[in-house]
Image (cartoon, rainbow, N blue to C red):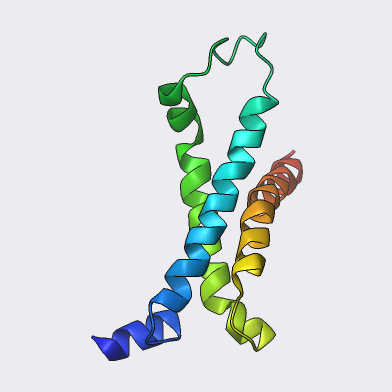
Length: 113
């Protein structure tokens, strides 16, 4: 099992992946929260008062996609940059990743038009 973990994560110490991943996910959640604060309350597509059920249902695919992107980014960070990822870099990755996913989504939509 240790050999599998090493081959999958690139390290035998799972905390080297889980701790930066936690920082990145916390930053992503903070980014989503900032988006909630800036939402248009008058829009027909969103409820006037904040609703956790609507928020989760509306963002579940976004959260899953960004979490997968963050996991891959953290696992392959050392291979790309030659150094382990720091907590600050993981935090920055978490803030930027959602914007990168949105940017890629817009590129894909414009390519199909």
